[in-house]
Length: 158
Image (cartoon, rainbow, N blue to C red):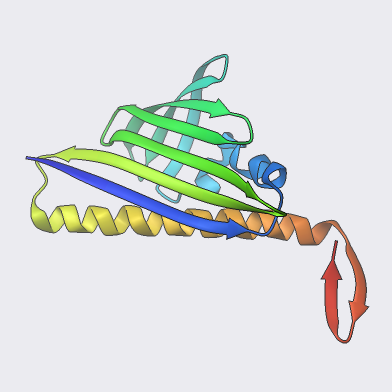
């Protein structure tokens, strides 16, 4: 039996698309946002595609191919390991803010109903935490750049 996990998480970040891209495109630091990743080792790079080995948890080796489309998308294909499928990290400019969207489409074979529900919950929580951490890091960098004026007890950040 094949079980499919489809996750879609969206979050508005109050920063420019360029600023958000600066955070999400630093793929060597993915473990800062994706808590399941414990280690990353880049294997090769050709053009906009990176092949890398990641370790999930204690010792689950996986191979990913990342295709990077500047300021718009990081497309991840799991090619070997415990996960099969794709993950896309998409950025859309909405005025002075950015919409960050994560889409995960994973397949698992030989998984029963109880385990499949746990997997869905696990990946949903992972995606929600990742976008929250990306938002926090992006907006923190934005606020830590310059604090301009204090107005009626509230700070205005530049």
